Amino acid sequence: MLTANTYMSHSKPRAEDTATSLWDLPQGDKCRVQSIQKGLDKDYRKRLRDLGFHPGEIVTCVMAPRMGAPRLYRVHNSIYSLDDQIARLIHISHQGIE
Image (cartoon, rainbow, N blue to C red; front, side, top):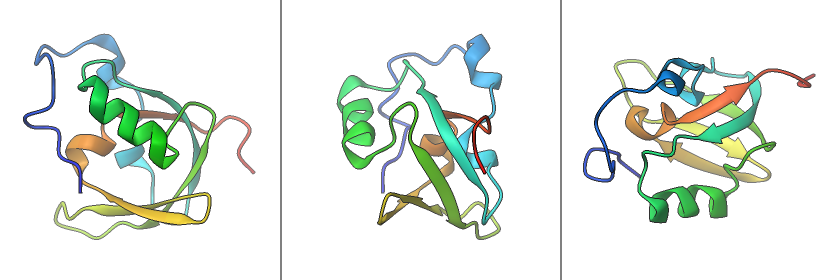
């Protein structure tokens, strides 16, 4: 599981921080990745892209447990667990999703 606490290169909130994030996606819904926040360390940004979390990719939230537990997301035929600190750094769009 990826966590963001020690991997952010800055801590000051920016305008893009308020965009809809992957963490806001309800269980069973799909979205399109819009961007990954630039404040995340470049190695972790690369790892997320390698896993399929890159702009334009469709992601489905397959499980969203309560109490802040990590959520499960499907990208292609793989499922990944992301905690809120990382999922909140992935900005999403619902445009073009059926």
